[in-house]
Image (cartoon, rainbow, N blue to C red; front, side):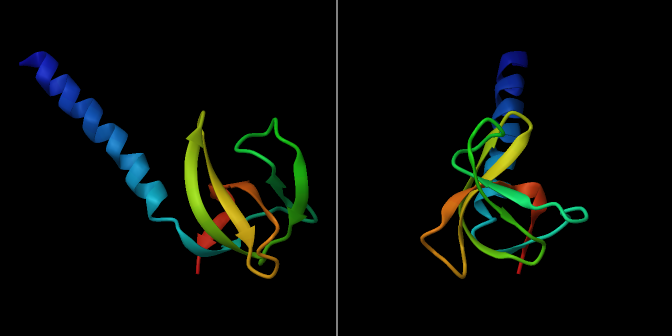
Length: 97
């Protein structure tokens, strides 16, 4: 019984973040970038990947999907104004429009 409850609890916990990430598809804007800094659009989902370009607050992106890497949720995006420019950004700096 105890193993069944543990398995059910772990199953429910793993569904939570996946559901939340799936709900993020669509147009978002970049928010919360401090001062003159930019949100880094990277070639992959993590800080170890190459920076493609910096995005200022207010930049609009199309979120295609999100995934978790460590404690960070990374979203695969393309720029709304330039759909061919694609990469990954931290979901912490995105707000759904």
